Image 1 (cartoon, helix red, strand yellow):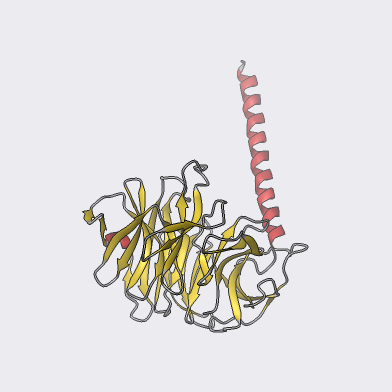
Image 2 (spheres, rainbow, N blue to C red):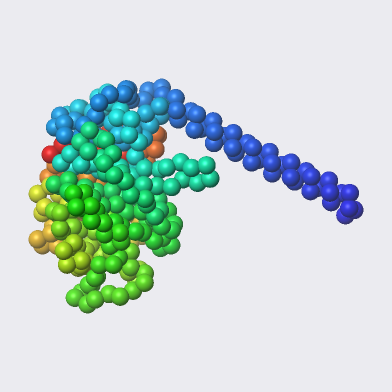
Length: 338
């Protein structure tokens, strides 16, 4: 090939690649602009006052396209499909209890996004914030509201594979003591201490301000662990448990479990464990659930599945009976009044 032909080919290649890049940029910008416009048939959302201590309201992050997308919204507790009141507070992950909120947010920069955890008061006003080491994935507040926990990915972006690392932090909202990384706690499995560089801890659910449950992973296996903030210990109780969620009465844990024969990219099914007997039961939800479920009450689980707007909330009985049904569209991270 002559020098002129090579230069012509190079020029054509540059023009084609430039066109592809411009097209991709315009497509992304167009999609972002569409998300700022309310979608026909979507839920009604309007600005208003939202509080964490209103017993007549349930909260969630609205996923509906429009100017309020990703804001924490309130709906009547008995009518989750009713009109949504948007708070103006945007969160990637959210949880609340006893008038304390935890909002994991993106901070958009000129070159890259960073993330922070924001502790909110009962009127959703920020009290303080903490810089995060990675992408937010889980958030929980203790029943008293005095302790919060969050998990971020510090490498990788999915629990499905093995190439990820997490960091889980716990904060006392009154004394402001920060346990920056639960991997520094002493882990025991089958009564033996584990000292390994591959330990990961994620998905805290609180029993009280001192005791909690979480997932710990090491040597390719995951375990339900019971944690103690006073003794700084993690004790394995049961294998193959991820993202546990404690029932309001403290007797059971809902969690996602890897099942044999499932797609490696969609390996989880929703189970419930009796903490007294350590017997587990599959729920009636047979699809892949990659979420930390929430207990609406002592008998009912709520969790997210992909939907037209990004995520819908579904529900299923916790005792293994019944069939799942969609609870509300275009929603994520629900909080129910107690």
